[in-house]
Image (cartoon, rainbow, N blue to C red; front, side, top):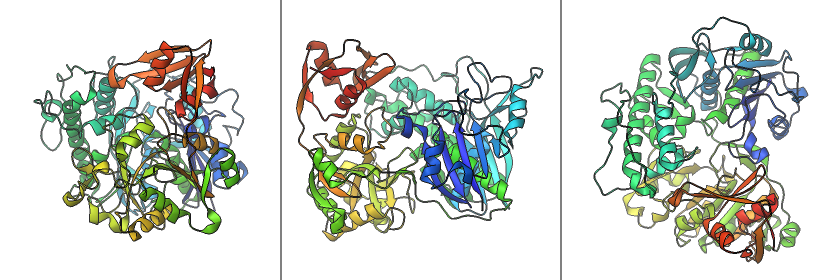
Length: 630
């Protein structure tokens, strides 16, 4: 019996626990710290180590092996501001004989392979940059050896930073078949050498901010009337092994981002050509038609869909968290496999992402104390039926129940839901609540047994990883979840892996209505997915949200209450960007809170502003002290 703890140190830091080949828990640091994309390069007490072990029902004494990955560590490049261990770290001794270190791409590969259930597979890993080393090889070594190697006094030599890796997994072992390395360049935001740097750089250029990949993916599906200023042929060469061209990067961004749909479309098509080429090549090298993919680029639904359509790919598995937060999962799996000295011949396929902390209880008494009205309680056994009823009445419903999702997409336990037919203007309402651009899509949830009735695409999508085509006969009635190109980002649910949502959908079907829900994540702009009962109660006071559904009850949201607020004396107001991409921020000291444009403008014009006390940005500003009661 082996328990392995995996740790990812880097941006989007995370921890995971695997016991006897079963993934028990995984938590991103941002869910604990409440800082979006939070992380650091060193072992730190900020890592969610204790929380992840607690979610798995274990303690550090139960752990047989600890496996860490240090994203930013480079030979002769650690120390000073970049230590491997924070001076205050005291959760365990880094030099404990249980503690090992794994390279970035090997951990990525394991994060996709072991949850896939494939006894043999091709594994493709692609990201902007992985581990830097002197030989470019994978490693799994004791921490002490890693420490000595990276701190050692060695003559200067070329450093290899992995960028793309192709593996064959046979007889329980990874075999590296081919690896590409990134090239150093003094203009990394212009010099594009891979599918990852292409997508990242264009997203940052168009949206003028980091982490805009999802927005670029959605923009690529919008129509455009004028002749395209850019095509995929401008960006990549033709043929079975396309390469990126140079000279096309002379572009102009527009204040109306929808006017750049032609650029987004060309970039998406070029990206798809690249990833399809790499996937086909990897399968050709290994001779194994089952394919697993990991790395941040595989959050791209269009690319995943194109790979899955390859004739040489028999089955494709992309985990719920293919980006760097998933590194901890791969590290934990590798620790289990190597410590148990078992050659796994395939494991159970992981089709559920509910690996985080359990929702905090909200009793009817606590809800009533917050001016919520109790609509139904769990004791009656009628929660899902009542939830289906209010959804079919057109209400928007927040679901805060069960264990939190690990990956970046809410899959029903930390979700904002509505019925795309019964709720008038469903997409507009959900995007308004989230303060997102009105053209951003929302994702449909459907029982797997109903999938082919409404959608055309892969046989399942429990993690919302693929694009589907909405069947023509349902496009008009389901227009709120149909993107402009006729696609939809479908999530399939089963009674086994997502019983609560499956039960709600079943009640909707029994009512004679289309059993599909529109889903988006339970968070506001620049905010991690909500984890606490306090935040769930505050968020659900939004005037467009009708109900809060928990394990304990269904609660009707209170009517909004207007209160006067003003800026605190130390508060600074700032605008970043322009047009619909502008971000409005109130800051004081180390605290910065994004707010809506209307509130921002009102605060500029008036000393005191009457505003909705339940609005998420107002609640956060009052909590942070950048606004005070007037």
